[in-house]
Amino acid sequence: MQHRPALRHLELDAGESLFFHSKAGSALISTSGTLLVTGAPRWLGEQVFRDAAALEPGQSHAVAEDGWITVTAQHGGAACLVSQPARVPLPQRLAAAAQKWLGRLSGITQSARGRYRSAQPV
Image (cartoon, rainbow, N blue to C red; front, top):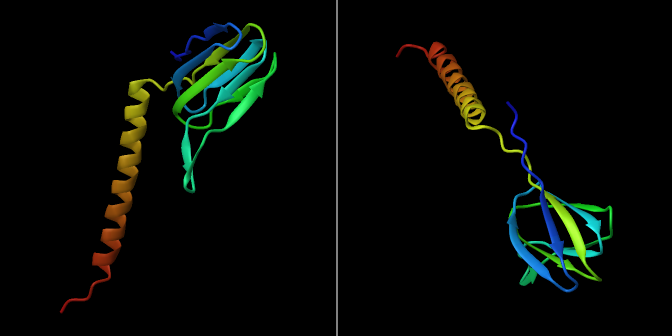
């Protein structure tokens, strides 16, 4: 069974802002009005920088990294859809981690075997 997250529908009045935490890979889709999307603050040299994108109706914006996002309605009312990336179910994540770990263990044992085979008796 595949997990599909529900879309969140947001409606904002003119000048109203919404501040929320979003995961990397989330998509914001403007359905009406103009939205200003301001990303999470980050350091760039010695200054704090926040990227911003204006969305017209029908445009979308993909969130690049986890963090706090501000969505502001510019002119009149605005609405948008927020789609979070699908989360992989726990059994699949555990199986992938176990497979990765076994692959590393196999590589370690093979390299150790090669070292000891070529050793000469003293």
